[in-house]
Length: 150
Ligand SMILES: NC(=O)c1ccc[n+]([C@@H]2O[C@H](COP(=O)([O-])OP(=O)(O)OC[C@H]3O[C@@H](n4cnc5c(N)ncnc54)[C@H](O)[C@@H]3O)[C@@H](O)[C@H]2O)c1
Image (cartoon, rainbow, N blue to C red; front, side, top):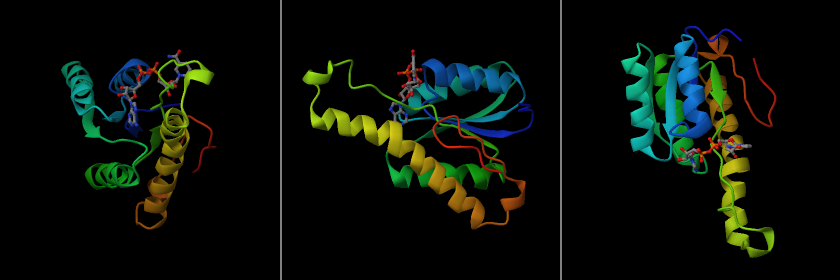
């Protein structure tokens, strides 16, 4: 996939796979919205990308929180007038607990981030595109359980 000049949101982008993905996409010409629940880590990734000539901005977003996801989508579209790709990377495990040691609360948090979070990004971005004049410019690719949408 050619990402040159594409506007890409990466969730959970402050560390690990999300960070590596953000840097890789920026190195290939994408403008990356580095989003993470931990804004300090997202800002460090942005500094790293910008220092090597890439384009990126940081955004604080808990993907399990509807309002924060909505703000992420709206602020991205407002700033860049487009949204091409979302990398639904944010995810957690139940603190490496063994199944019989995890509580229902532990499990609910995992589902809220790993599953509901993907749905919220999907729902909010499509709703934004359908309700706006940018519709014809948008192309989405969800790196997760949902199929791409053009
Ligand atoms: N590392 C692996 O071997 C592996 C294997 C299979 C799947 N995965 C999945 O890949 C993804 C990234 O894995 P990783 O190893 O890079 O993890 P990581 O823990 O290094 O990074 C996860 C990032 O997500 C952020 N995050 C956590 N909760 C969040 C939330 N509610 N909203 C927004 N951001 C949040 C964290 O701050 C962190 O920066 C996860 O979804 C993970 O489940 C990883």
